[in-house]
Length: 336
Length: 300
Image (cartoon, rainbow over all chains, first blue to last red; front, side, top):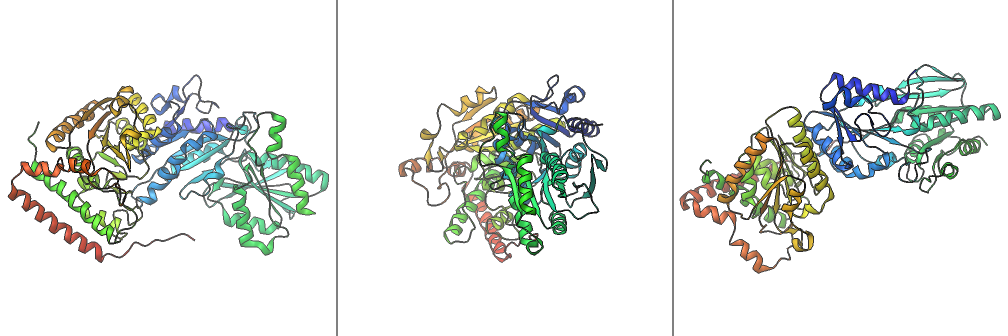
């Protein structure tokens, strides 16, 4: 048994012990505190030189990590809340992701920026957002978001060891205390694992994999469990079979795999926790309409956060974020 | 202190001057892509700093980077081809005038944005126990960016071998420093407990030796230093945006660092260098003109 949080922490221990050029840089990382979500716990004790706890300077944190990477180090950045990533956009867009291409491939910038996104904890409008879709249009950026069905520690190791270019590593904060599902079974679901083109696993969850599903939900990260819960309910109550595709990489999209799976089912719902308007789902949906329009029984439908900031009070927070109820309603429109 | 190698310095300064003036002509003829920010009048700064660097040291420059690039890489061909969008450009025409990279030279067009990158490089040099230093060139206009102060704070906390050269040419594009900068630049550096000093001169004889001392100090102490050089650009910010007072420009023309150094060396030497550089630049331009334009391969 391994928790999501533990998996990332263990992986950082492992990476640092194997390679002194791996450093973790961010705010409040030192023991005994060990980071706002405790991901860095124990690291500064075991690897004091490799953990750099900084002032509250998100832009300079990412900016200096870029410089370190350009000189052969392998910096892992922790941005305390994903919401603070807005402070780093210039470094991500005009520096980290530009240098390799703009400098005619003479250098690489292998930085990994880890950050927790997501609501459900009542942190309010500036500490609960899911903002990675804002970076979907940035060439040269890889965005990775493990769900509990993935192996977050292994994915982080892949990013640090194998990736030559900037990676944004999204950790949905609700997942930290959750147990990871490693095997090929999760309650009544079969867990089918496929290596994606970006080398990050894509996972298909199905109650009856040998049957043709009525609906396919395409999602990632923190929304996968919600989709699974809803899927089970919809099957028990309505005998509607829904498959779930949990992508490992948000960008680049595993286009061929998404198209292949969507084609089999013909009714697709794209689910994300980020805002629906201008969201990640718009890109997924567009890819499907552009490529397999004639194989779709219905237009692709989408669920994301409402066009409203994320409130703090739990009862209204859930009105803004995707819920099982909203998801179920949309599934019913697809099969109607 | 070594004696100043005026002849070699003049050749470098004249190369920058002649390159930039020719660039302005080519710009007017529509031969360049994008805009261009020339370094006319500030040549003594780039040459003074960069002459003292090792090849393994790194230079990070800004939008006004041609002078720094030529001083470090002595590559007018790669630079001209880059600005003219040719395949022989140092970044194959991908970057253009403000986005250069060769060996340990980098430049980027976002004000202050690269400063933490330079800081991180200096951190890596110290972490890896090298003797290398990193030099970042910024301008007075850049002092308006908040990231500069995040970086100064970290540079002081980390104590890394970073030399920040602030070329105060007194204008942020068209806006004079009086409208831009409260307090003083030197006090801003010192507020972070970074050793900061300034040079009130454009003259090579005042700048050259000072930077030898400073660079040795940064290299051996592995601590940051910020140096402000009060200089002046004699050309426009880019093109067609010069609204400065004519008398002010005239006043600074008399302090032109090339005029100063030319008085130190003999006329014969100066003419010989000028002829040599002019011939070199002519042949560079001929060669670049024959290069094919850049191409691109996109993944579909």
